Length: 308
Image 1 (cartoon, one colour):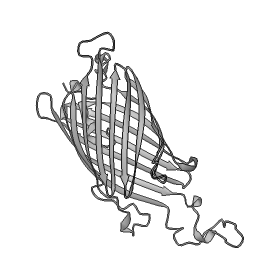
Image 2: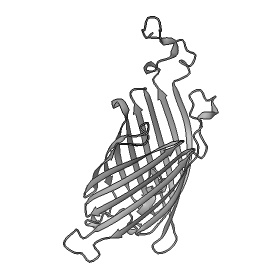
Image 3: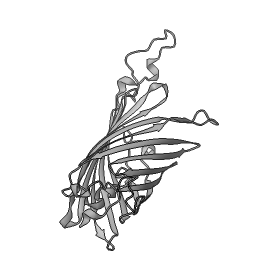
Image 4: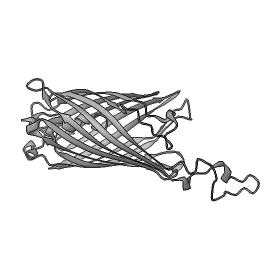
């Protein structure tokens, strides 16, 4: 959740790290591969947490690579016996690079011979290379032991991501998002038909960035150390939209959790130009909170027991 709302780094004073690999299947067998790393540490006596996440993306067919480390500061405020308010601020540094050797410029095309020239004299050839920018964000989360709601704003400074810094049309628009989640016990009487700690967690994230609008929904059944879930994602950009439907599973063992997700490709039968790609994700996390072993099978997504 910290990918959409960095205040999640401070939830329940967690001390955690993890890695994620994502592969996005496009048309013509092209893929976009990305990696994600995060780590968070809580300073309980001073009521704040520090979170770090690094996102990197690579598109081999165009030679595009993008890396963005992000540092977040999350402060904890107790509103009630079981309600906590977590405001945060984030600072990121983005770096984008394009391999011009994998691009084809107009003057490289020979209409007479049909051959492709190896070098280009296009004036843009020397300008396209790398782009570096600073990115600011803010967010908050209010949560108890079974619900949460929050909001996040990214690209507050609307950084210029163009390669020559002269074209102001390439400024990142501000991204607004709201989140909500609810988790409830489905085995309150400890029936033997399912594990003692069995819950259902429902989550919503809705965001808007320029003309792009996105809604993400997930429903996850946590059965002790094993979980399985469904997710649905709807996106609308300009005049078209698409939907993703996916499945996820994860297994926890002591301090480790391993999981995988697959989103099915979908093509709009009424508009064949709208294509929703397939997605494969795998992740591994490690929780080094000192009292984690006291959970004894309680792997709820929303908790406040570690605040005390």
